[in-house]
Image (cartoon, rainbow, N blue to C red; front, side):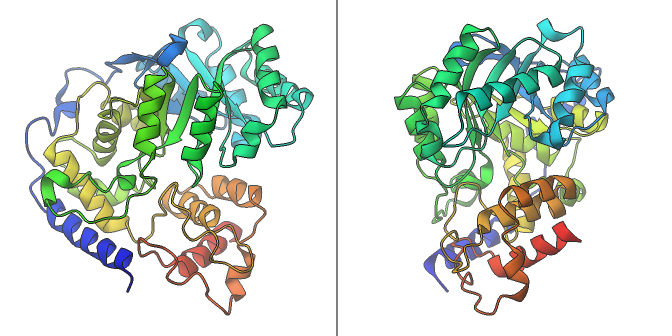
Length: 407
């Protein structure tokens, strides 16, 4: 077994032990005992944009037709709504547009387009116009280059020219990039150096930080995932670039955690507190699919730093799910397959299908990367065995992912 595998095993052992501690302590149930219905209790300024947004924003990757949940989020004080032209084939933007009609000046809308290395400004403007139409608005507050993991996409001279013209026309107010791949830090550094970002949306959660259990285990020897990401976020703060975190629930297997939640405090709330305790993070967005989920998530707003009980919940989650969760931004298995299967993308699709319970989102992601995991079903060489420094069985997970997606 590799050194990385040993560290991973020790981490899981430590996490399981910590998670058995009683889930009590100062503030453990503070989100649940607030008088009245849960409400957003903290708003923040999104960097140099000057935009004031709720610290917890509404993610809409699975939104399709349910205007009620959007209205409920607005009633609970959420003012930041994140979408993309690709979400649900445009239905996400359409639903937000209908649900937020008459409320446009009270909310901040972010949307995204996957601008490639050779896309023209005309094509990008056409995509923007399509989003504006679906959103029933004349401007998008934050417009991001979606899921950037290749600096070549940012070097395309058509992108900054498009941004300049769209801003001049009043169609977008601020811009930037989103990402959670292995080259995220490199892309962020390019965007910062070339003043291409007013706002960035980045994958960031407790599973990326080997130090989140430091106060509980006192015995850390783990491989950091994207060790330079905290430094990049600090640089964003220094440049007054707004930072929004996503993927904060690390697979979002919420039902796994219900038996261990006590006093009304939940795993999701603990994960949010951990993320927002980083001074370089302004806000987060998380997918919300029901009014009950909105209430659970909003209850973490403004509730302060993660407690010892919160950390125990996070450790328990890691102990239960660490063997199946691909780390955002790792990518160490990328070159392992001689057939060119985009393994991190396939494992992410598996997560959407099995953990999120969202096979439609999984299929969207799967076919976006070309459905490249089909060879996994008849693989004879298993070259990806041992390729994950965190101990994941890449071959088995990729095969499960393909079967979950195609049925």
